[in-house]
Amino acid sequence: MAAALADPRQDKDIKVKVQVAGENVIVDVILSVPATRQEVWVVLTDFEHMADFVSNLKESKVVSISGDTLKIFQRGSATYGPISFPFESTREIRLIPFDKIWSHMISGNMRKMEGTTQLIDEGGQTQIIYHTDTIQEYWIPPIVGKTFIEHEIREQFYEMRNEIVRRKRASASSKPTRSSARGI
Image (cartoon, rainbow, N blue to C red; front, side, top):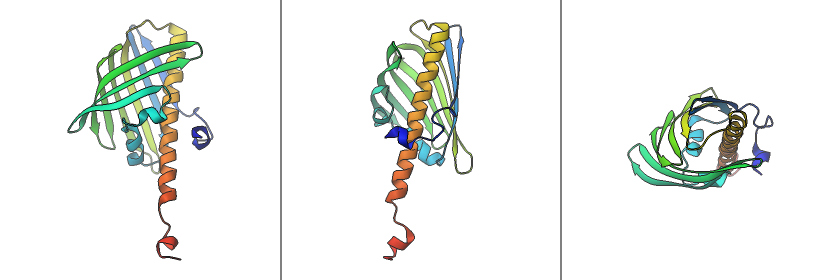
């Protein structure tokens, strides 16, 4: 079902760049979504239901809320071919509605995770710019590791984009048309 809602270009338009610099793994993602920043925001900040539409998540929940800052817990497993890595993290998320999401790992099975997600209006579409800098707890094989991370990140953003489009279509189909609102 989710694949049927996807953009016909599949995920090839999701630009993912993975750099391994010493211990640091730096990931940059750019993609456009045919939705408003508000429609994109609702999905990217739906931490309570994220495990329903991001396949590598087994659990995602908000632990606490303080103003514009959330503490979230996520647990899952990243898999690519025969390689699989379980993960879990508790992160502090700071929200600047419809513009930016900052993320800082408090605990989990990485030594460091800092990230930002920015939303930019492109006139009828929203560009998502994602950047994260992590230090993994385990060694990452240079070539296979980069391919694995790129695959996982691309899949996550593909699934989130599909959810944004699905919700937008569901919202549009549930709104009454002018003629039906007047009883015509």
